[in-house]
Image (cartoon, rainbow, N blue to C red; front, top):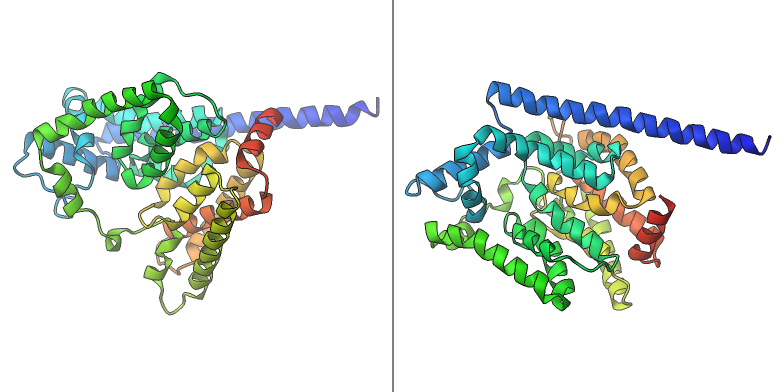
Length: 361
């Protein structure tokens, strides 16, 4: 009977954790859905989604007026605008609901109902702004699947063209998937057909859109919350010793990773972490691309909770910013902690850990 006590305590603890998870999930998801409903009632849209809507309307109905650049805040590739033309004209309210609701559903499904996923600060920022990174998140979900050497299905090729929506965020996964799928020509053929259906209408409507888009790409000076640690030298000031130290750490991690790569032990997860650290154009809400890898491992799920507990303190004090929320601190903290965790787990491969944690879970 005494031996059965620890087992009963463990069982009760597991039931309590599941109950708390359900309660927290309902509260967070309910709050987000309420945010969507209030926006619909007031006929207001999240900031970034509003920019996309205005850009789509101008591109489709006033092509002579449309222009890329800061004058109209149009920075997205034309295929996104052409893809939204008809839905925006037929059912604008439904489109807004789906645009805001689908990321929530996607993350809940990806996390298998773990409330910790909704506590991930980049997702919260993404949700409040109505951002578009969720459209390329499936590419990283497929990349995580490929880490387990699971053969792709033909319809997976339909998702490859989504990389054009945010190429600076999606190209790491897109290149990896194309390389991994080189042995599956049917999947790549589906991707090519899907790309033609998505890209060609944009060229029909505006043949020179690609040149215009590249000529008026958003400059680094306009980004307010860049997640990349490579951005640190551009933000150095009189009280920046902590930033200089962090930058030195990042340089050291990059050198270590090169040595690790020489020994043939660099996995896609390693490349993804380096991508997040060194990409100058990664913004804080773009870090949701880490979720398929973070949520797959128990230790990283715990780290997410720790990150969320301390990120606000770092955010408030790292740069001494007058606002109560600055994405820079959160953005720096997340990749650096994940890289540190990764280095502590070497030399074991991420794939082996992922498979073991799936068994444990």
